[in-house]
Image 1 (cartoon, one colour):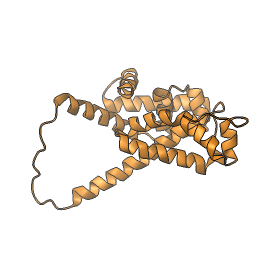
Image 2: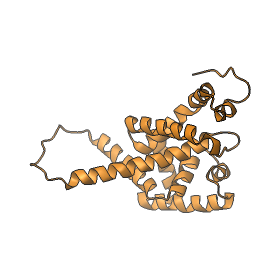
Image 3: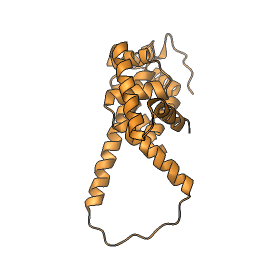
Image 4: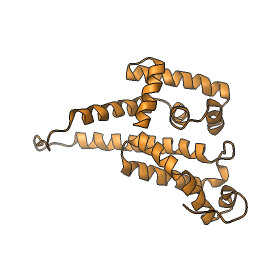
Amino acid sequence: MQRWSGKGEPWAAALGGDGEAFAVVFDLHRERVYRHALRLNGNAHDAEDVTAGAFLELWRRRTSVRLVEGSVLPWLLVTTTNLSRNAARSLRRYRALLGSLPRSGPAGGAGEVAFDQIEEATAAEQIRRALRSLSDLDGALIALTAFEGFSPAQAAVALGISDGAARARLHRARAKVASALGTSPGAGRTAVVKEQAG
């Protein structure tokens, strides 16, 4: 991790185009952004790509980034969520294309997969699917509050909406995720948080 030896805050220097200061900002937030991307994408390779993309967008849009309590982290997490959604859409289109191609015959099995690994992968995919069913704004609210520990008020600032609107949308989003998972709203939130921790 780089140490900041310049004057002032590294983000202020990065705004002026200081690459060293931006490297400090990167080192400061990289792990959290990567964990968020991994949780949303389900594999390390895609998470690395999304993390890199989020920081590229931070650099490109640095003059218009909305800070929350002086931090770029919420903006990075929202951007990570949006990039993850875009990657998931691309993957679905790619799989649909592959599915439409003619097959030469049945493929042979590569071996038996452990039952609990299948169950775990299925549960993780159900959660990802439930989260993808939300609007971009609602998905970002869930990501910031349930996964990243921000308060609804902080998430509202990051997303540019009122605190009341954030709370109302968050309530509806939690209910929608719970319904998609076949649980009650409180249990749905717990399941999402437990999946994130696992």
